[in-house]
Image 1 (cartoon, rainbow, N blue to C red):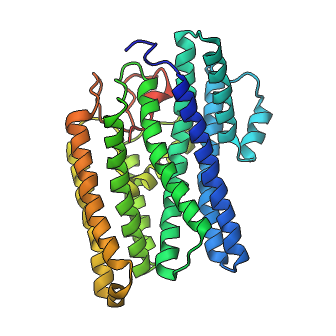
Image 2: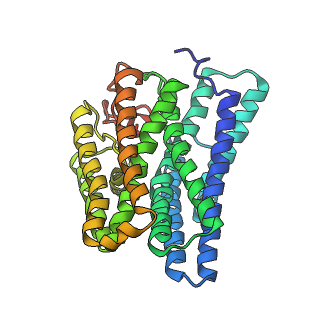
Image 3: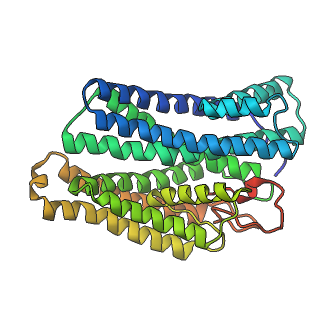
Amino acid sequence: MTSTERGFTTFRWLCTLFGFVFYLGDIGSDLLLSVQYFRSGYVSWAALTLAFVLAGSVCIQIFSYAWFKDDERNDEGDKGLSTCQLIGIHVLQIGLFTRYCNLLKKSFKVLRSGQSKEEEQYRLFGIATDLSMLRLFETFLESVPQLVLQVYIILAHNHRSNLQYISMAVSFVNIAWATVDYRRCLRRSLPHINEMPSGIPTAVYLFYKIFTITPRILSLTLFIMLSTLTTLAMAFVWLVGTIWACVEETKFCTSRVLEHLYRAIVGVILVFTFFNIKGGHTKVPMTMYYILSVCQNLAAPILLFLLKPESERTDYFLPIIFFIFMSNSLGLGFLALYYSLLHPRGHVADEIDGMERLEPEPKTRFDNFLQI
């Protein structure tokens, strides 16, 4: 693929701008919702809503700062920011905001000049890939758990508000955008991997992710409605995913402490969607993952019916059962369609989600990024 085909286009700049707007909208709506809960006397809901926002924000600030310092050591960073400025930016939780502004500014200058070297294009996509990876972390640490919480509040407590629906809608858009934008950015930033085609392949991949993640959100909500103690079972699933990442000895971070944090985030992502950590063939582990996922998704409404039969008389019970069944079927159908016919094939393993270091020192950290 030529450098021109991989160029940072006006459309790519607009995608970055839209991603920035979605990010601000997601965080802003959740903060406003927490304030609304607090003013209405729902202190626990306000605290949980705010806790998810802070958990996602703190984690991505840590990785953002570490990557700034890594780039600085490799003579690839922004020379205009001192260590004190970097620390201040990330303590104030605006590391992602700074990265967005930096990328929009630099790419706008390149587009306006009409000329750019291949090295500049590669660097722009490097910045974009870092940014999209941080957005991916933020999505599974904040947006997805936030949806579980808000759906639980609506179904279990029959509490509804316009701001609540807005927050959920923005979170849903954020999930869809982050998963697809990240995959496209990563594949485009790696010259030895074929780019993810736009159009139908991208749409099918998006549907696969949305229709497999959504029933997970609904089924986990039903489990929590059955008993809040089921959150311990969710914690166990997270622990299993984290242990798997440790056993596989992922090598994503230069710092051992950050590597453990990364593995913990891997565990969170595995609660909601599949990815492979070390590379190789994924047919068997992916099949096993989605068999277990579908069984859990279908078990949730069945157990709710058996243990809380009064739930059958609610107006949401039958629609949710129908949606979980149909969404699982559609999601697995789109998964099969994508990986059998539409997935781009490269000369490296296509199904690597947390790529193993193939050399003592990889050229870039992108070689170790996830491909969910």
